Every structure is written in C-alpha cells, then in structure tokens.
Image (cartoon, rainbow, N blue to C red; front, side, top):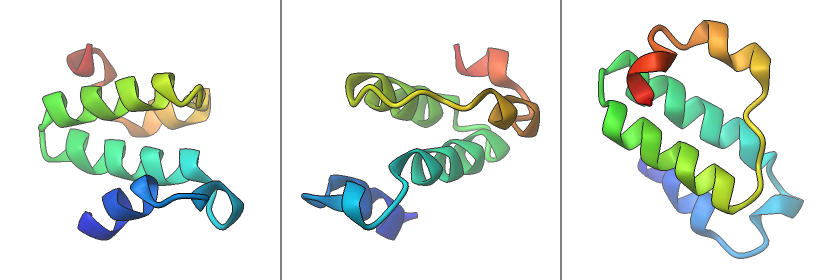
Length: 68
C-alpha cells in the first residue's frame, strides 16, 4: 500500500499509470479493512484531482455508505 501511495504522489504519474485505478485499489483495501476514514480521505483526494470514481467500483465496496 505504501508503494501505491508513493506512486500517486510522484510527478507525472498520469503518463505511466491509470491513477483512478490506483485510487480504487487503495479505497477497496481500506474499506475491506474497515478503515473508512482513510477511504474517505482518498475519495477527497480524487475529487481534488478531478478523478471520477467509476460507478462499477461501488458494488465491490462492501460498505460504501460507511465511507460517507
């Protein structure tokens, strides 16, 4: 998870990685571990970077309402 966070902070990462996928992976991880605060922070980060969470990800999240 540290590597995924580091990649998201790397300059120019958008040219090498689909950043939304990295966020989705991290959000799924935090939700599955019931760390809803961390998941929510990532959602806020996505919004600030103008990345839209793909609706097909929501069914994989076990408790999306718990994030909000």
